[in-house]
Structures are given as structure tokens and as C-alpha cells.
Length: 305
Ligand SMILES: O=C(O)c1cc(C(=O)O)oc(=O)c1
Image (cartoon, rainbow, N blue to C red; front, side, top):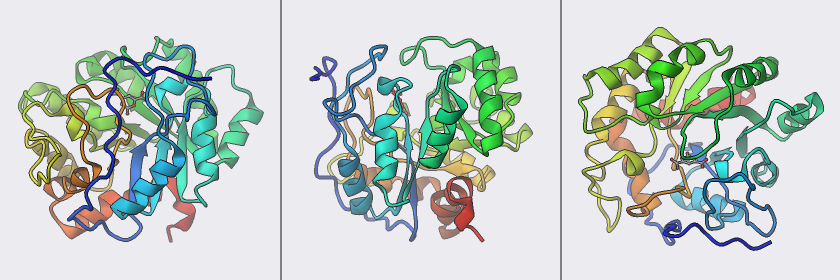
């Protein structure tokens, strides 16, 4: 099957810079995706966008180039609840990748156990309306109750304005909960303003809630863009991510978000995205927690003494 990409689609950046920031040994890129390839793993009929291909081999090449050791591959919405491209990536990673799946309520216990055997460690619940159709909360809660005994966790993706309405549901989830991209704050608003502080309170009051301090390229309004060697990219996002890293050092994760679905303005140089890390995690200790200790505890606990 061949697919035509969504008009205006930006392909991931080829030939990224070698990062100047040397990530610690054993670092984990805890949020990335694979897309297809479409001829091998067709995109889902219910998808809201059709991306370019971004294969597991291209992902692993990027991992090595950036100096990372491991990946967490998050099911992209363009594959719906067909996790085969993501699982195929895990199975070819030599144990160096874990996965986050999307599942429907109709999934059987045997299918869940097969995903577990393939090193899937969680499910993603997506509330971003441009990406997915609505799923009733009772269906999601039923899935949550079924995956909890596997020791899995739940990844949630939502926009900051929707947090009040989703608060009760999120805080009732029975597992560790990981928020994608800091709950997508509006970075034109102040860090100490009501909206971001609501998110901080969510993490403050609920010790099972973690955050990915990822996607400055998605959230930034001011730039500058991570292109052409820029070492001070996305200045307006720095205070938000740094705040979370310093306040919740043991509950933050970082990921490239490669291949960066749905960016409209520019495609960042992933090498320069890595150079963003010391802006938000300014000490060696914070960097080690963010890139090694925290993701290892969540995704490879059997290797953590
Ligand atoms: O903001 C997005 O467009 C986006 C989309 C997806 C996905 O389609 O799965 O994942 C992300 O992490 C971010």
C-alpha cells in the first residue's frame, strides 16, 4: 500500500548536528515514534494525518548519532491501535527499547500479554482533539484497571486548557501517570501564573504523576529555532521545563519526539535539541536523573539495583 503525506507535511531533519552536550552513559530517549514504513505497516484508516515514513532503523541510527543508549517508542496516533510497527521496533532493538501502546477496550488478555512479552510497558490515552476521536472515560478507566496488574503505566497527552475538566479522571488513575510534553503549557503565560501552576499542583499533590519535559520546538513561540548551530534555542520554553526539572527531579523524563509529527513551522535539528538539555537541567546530577535514573526506574526496573 502506498500513502500520500498530508499536504504541508515536514519531513524529519536529515543529517543532524553532533550534539555539543555529551549525554551521560546509558541515556534514554524516552519519547520517540516510528511511522510505518507505510508499505510494511499501513497507517490506520481513522488517522488524522499521514506522515512520511520514519523507520526503526532510522530511529536507531539517530539514537547512536546523538549518543543515547535506549529508546521508549510511543505509539503514534497515525497507527491507531495497531501497534505492530512499534512492536517491530522493540523486537529489533536488542532489548534497548520499551514501548507505549494504544489499545481498545476490546483487546483480549492474550493480546495484552503478548504486548507485555514484547516489552510494552504502558498505554497512551490521548485527549488532543486534532489527533484522535473521543473515547469515553469509562472505557479508558476499564483499560487502566486491566493494565495496572501488569505493572504498566499510563501516558496522557492533553492541552493545558483542558486540565480542569480532566483533573478528576487523571487523579483517579491507578498507576504511575506520565504527562506528555508538560501538558502543553501556553508559554506566553507566566510560569507562576494560574495555568502552569495548576499543572504544578497536579504533580505536587499526586506523587504518581510524572512529566516529560519535551517538545520545546512544539511549544515555543519566540524561538530561536534549533537550526544552524543555535545553542540557545526556544528560550521561552526554558523556564517551564527547568521549573519542573528542579522541583520534581525524580519524576521527569526527556525525549526527542523524533520524527516530530505535525510540526508546521520548521523541523528542528535533533542534535541541537540535545543541546537544549543543559538549559533545563543545569547540573550533572539533574541531567543524570532526567536522562538515566528516572527512565531506567520506570522502563528497565529489573536492571536497577
Ligand atoms: O502534537 C502532536 O501532533 C503529536 C502527535 C503525536 C501522535 O500523533 O502520536 O504524538 C506526539 O507526541 C505529538
